[in-house]
Image (tube, rainbow, N blue to C red; front, top):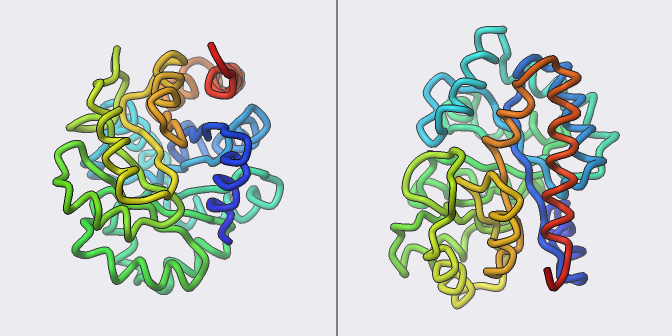
Length: 268
């Protein structure tokens, strides 16, 4: 069993929703990123999604785009990110899922890329610009090396496509709650509840909801709708970038604790 599957199995026995925070590697610097991973790990994160900064992040909203730009301007590279992870992951309880666009994988070569991220302690992989039709060349070798390649379901996906994605996705299924890019939104669309039920009709794999969750009440809402995980990105990235690195780390610790408390609580 992979680390991510084990995490969901453990939480599932307690009927507990997973919290998956997202941060961008290298913003404001990789030393702070390593510290942020440790802070999130001890503040309630169950899985941590780490974004590799990329020059053309098509799925990301303005907050994460700006963070990626700052990280790239500081010279952050994939090799630097993996070096940081190799030194940091042994001390973490939470599995790391790497969020990266496909071009860096293609440039490096699938086998080499997977071997390198596995050596750095990465347990999962999310590639937002990799469509199902082209995922086969990554799904099989990822599975063989023990890395879960998690696929995304869009709100516009047909029933047939949702079923196919649910069948192929590893670790869990990533349900995108909105049509568009990541970002902070004032409310979630009620159709997320219907989409969760539709996916449930095809699979018993865990389902995580992301894109647009930025408030404690929204995380609680997706849990009440039946999600197995709440994925929160821009709100963490924004907090980490404000003030000094120490202030940012304190802010994400407090936010992480409040989110986890909300989705752990029963009957509230």
